[in-house]
Length: 80
Image 1 (cartoon, one colour):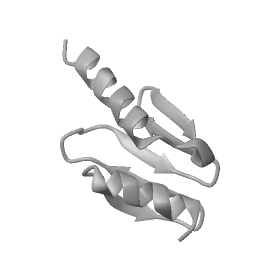
Image 2 (cartoon, one colour; image 1 turned 180 degrees about the vertical axis):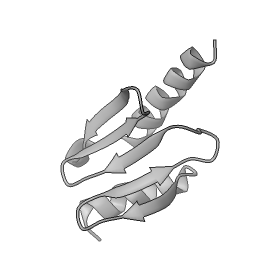
Image 3 (tube, rainbow, N blue to C red; image 1 turned 90 degrees about the horizontal axis):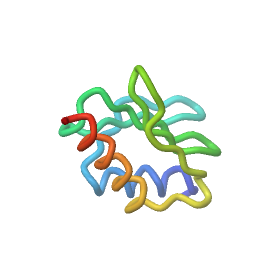
């Protein structure tokens, strides 16, 4: 299993679902986070909306807990 697959698996364990795969990218969404797309590439893992990037981490330094925490903080701020 390569690094990209490992990151995708970690995100799936946290409830994300793969919606599309290309030769270099995997796109995921979370049912409880409408409007947010997570893109796992060959260098970066990025969560974004149509309006802005929320969080970006290097694939080789991916920390799922920190990534998800930043997403939750964004959603909490957006809900206000």
